[in-house]
Length: 579
Ligand code: TEU
Image 1 (tube, rainbow, N blue to C red):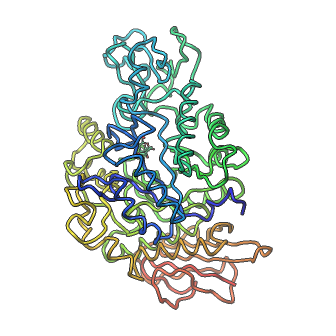
Image 2 (cartoon, rainbow, N blue to C red):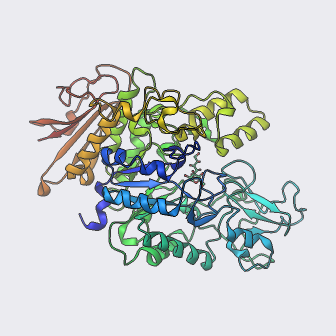
Image 3 (cartoon, rainbow, N blue to C red):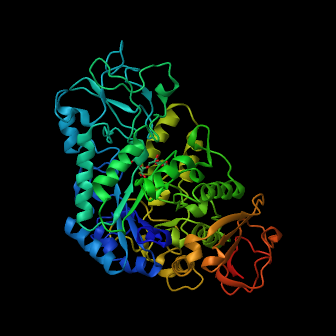
């Protein structure tokens, strides 16, 4: 493996700073809290920490609305503490990847404050400003330049009264989109990225990076390129057509040249790319193209979304899930690289969504989800709390929630006549606050997250599901993650072996084979997992050819003497090395 491919045997842990650990008692997680828990990360065995934003921000979207890319928000601490975190991680052999949010800034960023000040301000064209639609008075319904809807509900354009023009925001009105067509914008972003690398950061997780290239048309009367001008065009309405735009690869290759080229190997750049199909992911992650190392694709986390989107929850089966991941294994088998994740700060808890949060099966299903994820080909991401098997909270009331995405959706859906109870049920199942519940460190009141009152209520199960209860327990979900991470570090086949799905049509079993060529050892790793509450499920493995020995490597039921083809208990999984 070349040094540039180091990330193929690495595991990344995502820290959502607001909810990880609070060191000053204000009820909000901070850098001091992360520094105080670095040994938890070292003990787990992870190689990289992805840190969600800690930059200055009005916190409209919990930091994904940045007002100063070069400073730490006082809520989280200081630049000196960030330097201490970088040093503390590096001392433990752990890299730090920062979240890079450059599709948009905060509306409080100096760039936007200047841009909005007048139509002839030098930074006017750093954002997407457009006049009201022809024939419409500014501020009247339908006067927005296009009929696009924001991801966080409502129009994707907001009128600025001072100049009578609208500005584009794919997300919240507090998150105006940067105009990447403007080379000044690009160069300012690249310079900022270089400053962070010079400070010792090891790369970036690039927020919605495949949205930065908008499809533009001929200049309008003001000389600015049109976006979708024709109201009869389907792209004029609904979700903005900004995914994987016409210049995205050009921009990413320019970024690579301007920021990363010439730096020593060892950096990690992962793009968050909603709506990215496999063929685009190959282009993004082909090392020869100099764009990204890997991407977060969304196919599997959109399986339970119906035609009306995320909150239109539809049934999803194990067959759907394993088929989706297998498509991506096959699609990026020869060129490119997969990230592997089941949860993050935007998703509901994996064990509730893909496993089983019935107390009888929660722990086993959390271990088995980890087994199948970590044994796929790609770089696994562990989201804080998922290493403990933390389930969804079970929200029942709107006042328990804090996330603007959920609160905006509730307001819009109820205003549109939807049943408030059904809307609340969807928010409880898929709302982002599930992932943002304070990390439970011990069984003390509040779970050891803060000595104050946490910004979001502690998990109701923190008394029993917490780090202190698991780190020394050989049968815990935490320890199971440790074993999986150690296996990836010790067994090259986990990182480099081919992938072959077995029993593709089985409704309960998730089984697959990982193999390396005989020229490099000829290792065969077999994963058998029962992703159901059914007991005694027997895997028919005749399709894969036999074996003479089947060394158990990682078992969700420690001490099991079962072989690969023996019956599996509910949510039991086994990894065997075959010869
Ligand atoms: O999320 C981008 C994204 O795709 C969101 O639509 C996300 O999937 C959605 O919230 C799930 O319902 C990124 C960040 O991860 C997210 O936290 C930010 O809110 C968003 O961009 C804007 O920066």
